[in-house]
Length: 389
Image (cartoon, rainbow, N blue to C red; front, side, top):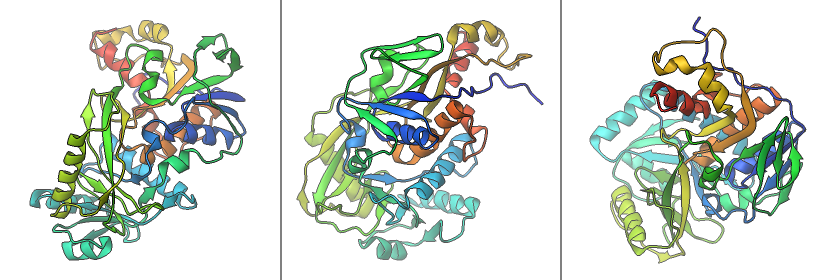
């Protein structure tokens, strides 16, 4: 058996500060509160970021081969489906993943065969069946995920959270000292940064989350019965009668102004997806900044004590395959739950469980190795192997 490079922490906590009240923060605070942990949830303007969108889709983009990323997203999707079924802000309308080309159709068909899921979880549909499910004419086949759907995201993140105290303040002080983390002068057993790209000034240099601008367009008119996606996506109408579609994807752009070019881009995505432009009364568009990691997997877990790790694992600089006799065990009491990109609705329930497992010593409802694959430690290890630390 090969020795691991590190073993995860198991702290045991009673009081935790969670910074950021979007999808990641509310999921983390609730997962901890359900284990009896007192949680303070800090955010000066809840639902002001990407989690303030009116609608979001629960979707997954599996691969033919069972890669780590594919396994993570599938297991995150399954847990999210399970958790959301009783959530009043969730609408389990199902979701269509449509092929865009013949080659894409062949790829989706291989995925369908490889997953071998029962029809209540996944079905292959031709263009005629897809059109009947959607209520709009489409030209291509695809996958139908019956348990998926869309969430009224802003309402969801603003809902009451039993056992969680909301504090509408900015965090101006974050200091770890001995066995305490001080947040705005108050002491906690631990803290979790869930504030997306706003966390960047508080992160160690080996973590480099990236901003990705996304503008979502809204329209009153097309009455889709289910969510549908390919390169672009469209949701069914919400309580206001508006559907969301898009979305633009602009890396390294952290501006949130509304741009006509982005709305035109989103309309072009709909034309490509449905074979015709959307027809209806435009609603108000919204732009926000997503937070993406360099490898497009979330960054979740306690931060390594970098100086101790660099000394303990220094041999990785000259031998990337080397394994220590004893794994690294030194972790900060500051954790992160970041880098969900455009799929936070899918990933945050599982990632909240990973944080809770490290703080409370409980198992996660997924493959045991997935916590290591999304740990922030992976980036410190990569920096060592590249002789960048």
